[in-house]
Image 1 (cartoon, each protein chain N blue to C red):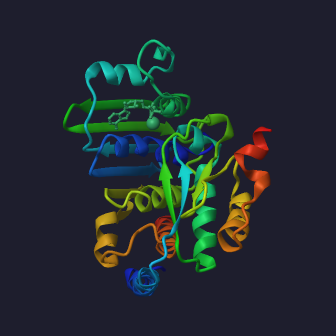
Image 2 (cartoon, protein in one colour; image 1 turned 180 degrees about the vertical axis):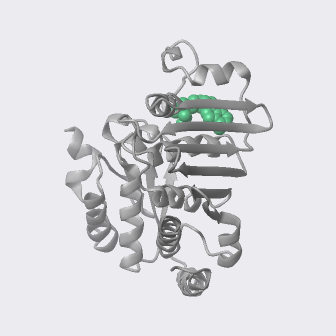
Length: 181
Length: 124
Ligand SMILES: Nc1ncnc2c1ncn2[C@@H]1O[C@H](COP(=O)(O)OP(=O)(O)O)[C@@H](O)[C@H]1O
Ligand SMILES: [Mg+2]
């Protein structure tokens, strides 16, 4: 993927597919240590230990075993190629935690890209689910909660194009603010 | 900076539009964007964004945009499907943001599907 924000969009689809009612997405940048943490935490149906092992390995897929996708292996590779790390832990019936750590000064670091667009897509295309997005740069933090937005919208769908444009602008402006302080 | 008060105003306007839509009882058009790994890698996100922005800009009513998983033709992603009431589904393949804007103006506004972007034209 050309941007990590695209990996995040893809990984969050797994949480949605797993029936998570709440998914938390964390993007934490540490400019002093030159690290980036991306976490996707959900309360979906979870996976067994064996499933967790299998989904990390793209070569596990064969036509005779169950279909395993590329989403997780791609994200794992993006983190590990920077000298960072990747973990996925899961419990059946409880949820799944995906964490990727990046070294941002590595030449193999993929830029984060357009997170506003990713969060807008996730939040506005999945009205029936809740999402919390926590974006931080060192000690500055911005938190976006879909539940808070829905309370204001009072039944107007998040997928209304005018609402989507507002959500995207709101996230963009608040993220830019993190870098000004 | 954008505030939550601003969202309140957007909500009120949208509510009026929805009420008007409901009142004339017309079934809406659905535009569906494929958002599986293959679609996302090929550029589905900017396509979705271009669609919603153009629809918002032109204040088009009766059109909703939704996402779906893998449509099953990974090599033709990004794919969008247009479902108009009483008409056959139109499948657009290898979409870009620019092409998506054209689909909005030609197909959704003027009612003329953009044949050259459809799966039939591209796979011929
Ligand atoms: N958050 C999650 N909760 C439950 N199952 C998951 C989750 N993430 C991934 N999985 C399982 O791992 C599989 C592989 O995921 P992925 O690599 O993204 O490929 P794909 O989504 O195309 O199947 C999924 O199909 C699903 O069965
Ligand atoms: Mg996936």
